[in-house]
Image 1 (cartoon, helix red, strand yellow):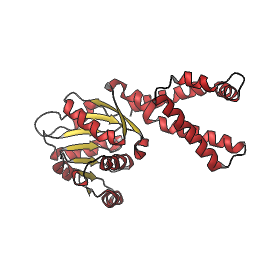
Image 2 (cartoon, helix red, strand yellow; image 1 turned 60 degrees about the horizontal axis):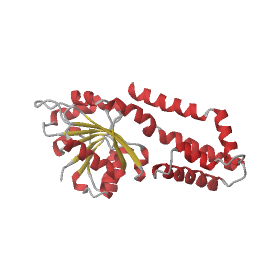
Image 3 (spheres, one colour; image 1 turned 45 degrees about the vertical axis):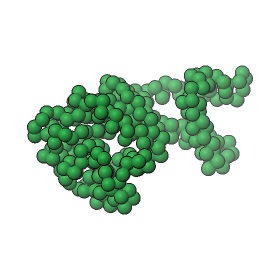
Image 4 (cartoon, helix red, strand yellow; image 1 turned 120 degrees about the vertical axis):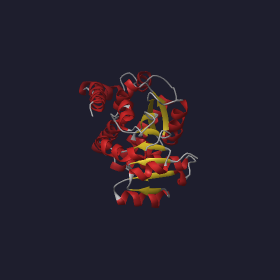
Length: 268
């Protein structure tokens, strides 16, 4: 089995490791590296994988390296990895805003040219196996590299291949989007509490309504606009609520949020 090393063992790396183990990967084939001793101990005790503080050691032990550090730490992580890189290595990156060209340039072994790089962008629902991951290939990555990355990230949800020029826009929707949905759930629950519902009941109702609506869209039951119209009986309660949202500028605010997130990713 191919050995896979996570450079960085934060929450997203943990989500992916958890999914991989549930999806049939063996713990002995997965390793991690992190400067935080508590994170290393947690990953070892919880998932049975070996961890180190040394990125170079990780590179020496693994064939595939998953770059899972924050973008601002990429340069330091790459410098530590570089002495241990071999032409046979493959790289997968989950770092927002770091292009495949930047990865290829920074992660070159001493000889052999650029490594195959696949850039992916998962989102936080991966932690419960309900994520969506956008994926694009670098200039040196082949079908085998892409398929292996898909195999990993399909353990935590859906995988959608995209051209790299669309990755930042996709991040603005899927990567940032869960935060916007959490705000909607919270606001709906607050509205329910305002109208007299116990808070726990209101939150459960709001979350289930969001989940059910999403399942209807994913099941191909109709365009979101059509599905919305199906709930809005003439003169009914829902159309009154939709009117309130339109007056408050919900659509424009959501579009601005996606735009802001995408532009930030492009300029990290």
